[in-house]
Length: 194
Image (cartoon, rainbow, N blue to C red; front, side, top):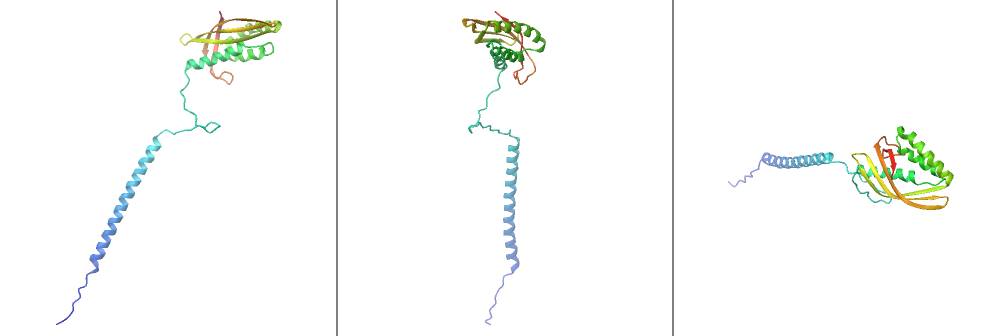
């Protein structure tokens, strides 16, 4: 009996083994995809909660630096310097314009007194051809009392004759509405020259 018997392996275990191997691959791929999706959601959540970074560029392409907000004293100093620039610097040709700009720093309730005082100054300046320049050197501001003392030099020219003197002005100020002419919102209530 020389018969050859060929044992044939069943296909079912091989099919089950291949399917199990494929299933493991799909499970691993699904777990990796889930991990990537969770990390992407966390990353998106973190970026969503961060404040926006705004870059401002100047005309030459450089990034503007972030600066601190100006202090109240600095704002008052700038406003009072602008007031002094228009109130105490004039010639007979521009005195009316400069005093009208200085009027933007006067509250409406004080405007009549200011107009009365400035009409005398304007009349004298036009009659005597007065030119005046003020150079403030120091300004001490008292925020509690809302006052400022401005000291400096004043150069006046009456009909071509020059004279230098000291400028010392006590200014009392108040906060008020901001406007294009007075962006600081600082208004002079009282002015006293010493």
